[in-house]
Length: 99
Ligand SMILES: [Zn+2]
Image 1 (cartoon, rainbow, N blue to C red):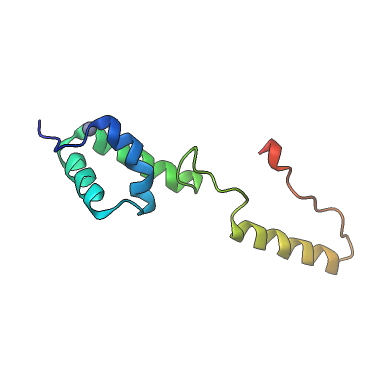
Image 2: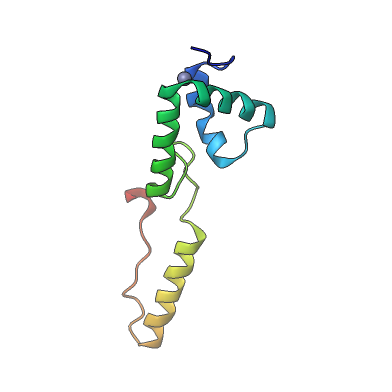
């Protein structure tokens, strides 16, 4: 088995950067060579991609500090609608601690 010079452990640590597209070209090259020759890591990458698709964020540990802007825009729109219909106050912001 030829897995270039990147170990599986290193690959797991790099997968977030890889999916975010922030991996330097040389690292990305090693990453992709490893993926091409290691079935286990190829499967892992596939799982991570699926996770990103379903959760809408990259990975545990790199969660953005606040709600995504499109969500805030949606909240603001609901708030505007409520105010127009005269029932402002029914909408409450989500408590971030109980996420
Ligand atoms: Zn591997």
